[in-house]
Length: 562
Image 1 (cartoon, rainbow, N blue to C red):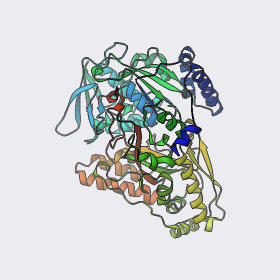
Image 2: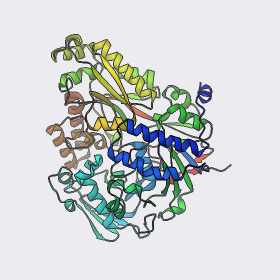
Image 3: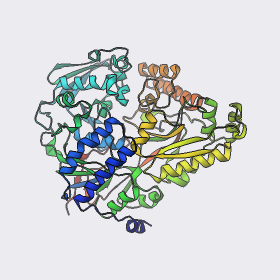
């Protein structure tokens, strides 16, 4: 089957002509889909680079397939995992992720000190830390970048990660207009002091999250939202940007100014974009791609067969697929309807017949074992109770229930097949008619953020190994909520958990909050916990390890010469 797939999907990327045509096609498609102003600006900006570089490219030391075309590479704005991988190659936080186990290790900060009460952190920046353009990276730029991230006008969806820092929540929510009140200050050129609201056990891992990456102040002040067009782009990470061919590839070069440049072995890396799993697999099997870094762009129907190969690597990680309900739109304004849909889903049918990689069915949103936590079971499969709830909501056997749409992003057959399965189960058990609404990645993100959907596929990959990384997505004031649901009791439970010093009592409060989320109110319902799968021949590529954070930084990767 794999051999026939390669034959059917042969792809030639040998000439610059292909790349130019690919860019123009991407621009016209962006216009057709109504791309956001910010994203369209990025398309037009990089057009200069594309047209200047429409020539055959020498093969890079490593060629990676990364998944969908990024919406942005601004680390404080991005939301997608594919976007984040590139941003983590170009920029770095005070800490970075250890490639072997996903824990925090020194990054731009060489070391730190933590007060005895866990409320104050001193980070000591490396004197040798520099932007790729040669200017020093100093403490005041770190603080300036964080103030930018929490300013509401920046519209950073991950700004809620600053809630653990003093005054962060008030600034993000617009209650405090002076971002300089954020609990972070530069004591001198190389020392950042951070004051927390409460002890935060995962704070060092949080510092490796993209929204905390310093950004180049001069470039941002000059170019605003489009600072990523600066040429050369000031980068703080192990790589710098050479070119960006939209819907084709990023070309990166080792950053000689990076503080750890001596340990970065791949001189040039090409990062291909595309959401066609068959194409990605074909490129890998033909040797044109060294690594496929995302399970979603490996053909789901071939998952079990591929997992048996020595160049495909399966592992558990902190990821969850779920469904978001638009609680502002009928019929999902009614929690009984949301619970009915959740209880009509036989999640084991999805994992047994569609994903087929050992994913664990789960109606929760937090994967079991995250930070030693055991989530509630959620609403289990119970069609009889689902029908009773639907009747109580005024739709006996589905009569009078409006036609609804299930929205999902294209690019993986798994998402389409899951949609068909959900459509079938709701028709079979509840008499509900569901239309499927597949969208391109960027349109899907835009529609989800705008609450322009009935119910929609959702997923989350943990930013740190703690249940809060999943649960704080659904705070009333989180930019990642995207359900329209707000519940003061839920917000207060998460605040109480943040203030709780006893680890076990803290996990108990979080479990109470998740019970409210997935059993009572149900603005979301889980489908399954992820299993990771990446493709890399260990005889050709080294420096990649499975880990629960699904973090595979480029700085550790190397091509093994024969």
